[in-house]
Length: 475
Image (cartoon, rainbow, N blue to C red; front, side, top):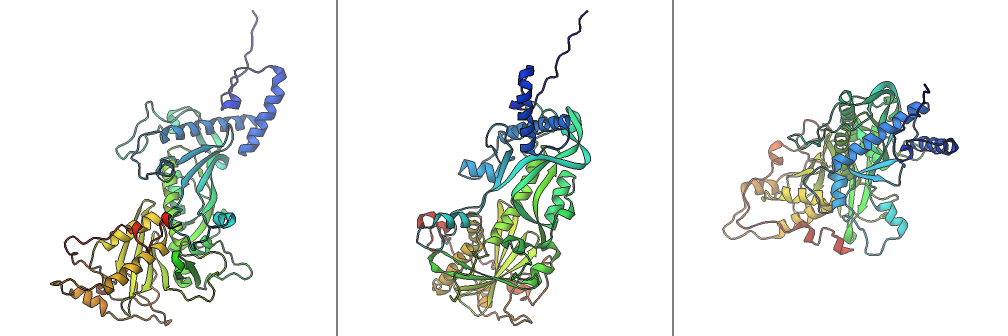
């Protein structure tokens, strides 16, 4: 009896979908396979590399499947909705068998234009916020992990009561135990605070090596500065002048004592996140979006490189202070009184941002909702403060309606006194257990938001139709 040996069948994407190979084609096939391993930077010997590439292809297929599951749209632009809110982001394969990319966050691009002249191409490239993306690949791991060799989605795919995809565990499907893991290689790297880095580990159960992370105050990482020659040390305050539409200027001060000494504000630029299961990806993307939203708002307080407004007098001086790992406050001089007001910005997640105004003297409770709407739309602190400052000026110049005397709350705010910190700077801050304790703060009763009801029919106009908020139509 003659025994015929069959060659093993290779399943690993389009290049590996070969049932059989003639000997004259094998050399060409080997060259292509080696190039593919190099393109993905896949570690190990040929057999291990083949298994890792196959596992990565199954991972990508599962991500494609969960991206097609029904969901409630949150943005009018379908592509932006998928990128900023999709379970697996916007999946991109540049061409067949090339590394796959997930685009997962893009801030609005219609909020800031500082002059009426057309921008040059290089200026546009420098000022447009980058799209946050991650390349999907594999890397060597000190520990062995179970990696899928088949889909981990039940058939048909299911959603749990919270709307999250249901997955099988790696042990419930074909898998291989290998000294490697999947990687999200972030492009560009995302500055993340310590608590967010810890949350990454809780999701994946794989720590990010601390030796690869260099810790610094979050604002310093957002500016891209280091303690090289000519750079400011961590203990020195940073001051930025930010130009706005219409020629307005804001000057933002970030106190080094507040940002540098608060443990919750120590951050590191994370460029690679290890994981082992497709169920990790939606949770990781949500966490990355949350940190990216915080970073976007803080970056909006940072002026362009160089001080193009040198010698100009700012229209508004503002102090930005951390309050917790997900919130910060902006203190500014009221235009209608010799006292300070404070805007507290709380980033609950990338799509839930709330603003609370303290010490403004305004008696309309809808102002907080108005400011929250403007902030979520433009993701810019200067745009929000410009709109708020204009609203306060209008409120102070508008006469009281007949039969509507000034309320005690409003009178108290208008007669409130200025608070001076030991350094001589003016400050007024909301009470926050998580925030730093430097300086003095106004009394708690001084900061309680007004609760007097607005007059019947009173409402704020569409913030995007106002002249003091930049809209795309102003370009």
